[in-house]
Length: 432
Image 1 (cartoon, rainbow, N blue to C red):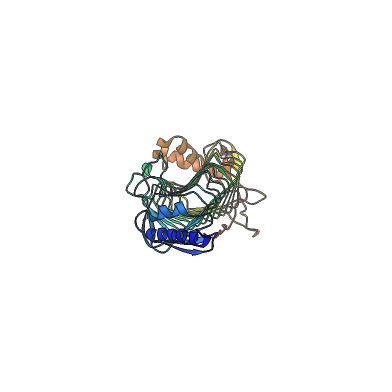
Image 2: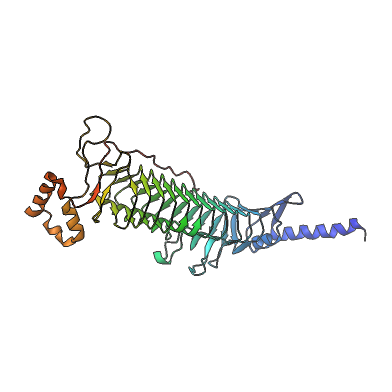
């Protein structure tokens, strides 16, 4: 048979396969754009037939999953393209490096926490993956990064499962041992935690909006990373930073969170600048055994306790912040004397009645946020019944006349007369 005659049957066979699968081909020999119509197992068959570098365009309609991407391709959805996992395992599993998953509606993962069922699951070999502009609903976890390097999860909308108890839900985005990966501009709601990271480093979590969750951002053993410009609203805790070191936490907002705006537990040598807590959580910020951190330019307002600072925390620089309208500005029950000023500048306290006669922006007298009565009540809660007693009144009067009666605690030797005004973050990511 001549070479020309041999080519014709092969070409006809390829065209017949494409027609049977509802697939359209365009492009050159090396890389192609492939269109996949909904229905049947067409998407699964097409992914098994693609070449590295191909672009698979998923047409509008419902496509059956689960699917596995084991070669570097672009999987992109036309408007209205849905991949449904049928409540089995992961809807999309990525095992190859340099894969892009874009513009899809991804729904219907399995419900096993032990098996980490997710809408999009990136394995430890899915380095440099890009997951962007997808809408993930009805999945246990939204996006799960289990070990890839330098992945990007950007501008996705993730709606967690509300039909499960909170402890049975997965997280919006979960990361484990994924150095260099970034989570940018996602809109995450419901589920358990918005973003949970464990045993990682050199990550960036920027510009995300996280609502109606347990924790907005939950850090465990993740070092040398950035948390910047995120918005937490209506969560139990905004930002829970635990056992993580050398972080930059800047320009974030906690609004209407219930328990804590920020929680720092054994978080060390970090910079916490320009953040805002507002809307009345129990504690604007809780610092527990967190050491050698710098808190500057933050605004903590409208909380029952502005800052709860435990005796196990050492060598922190807390200056240039604003404590506005908190029922108790500071809760500190240790006996050490702590001066919350640095370089002649302290913090702004909305209940400070001091004067600034020379107009340098610094009050003329030191400010003490807690009295001896406060300390007695915190150490012995039952003493609250004596708050309005003659003895408590006399004790407050004595301290006002004889400051030496103060037994240590927090003092601001250079309180500010005007608060810092950090800029509110504006959410600009995530397709609605």
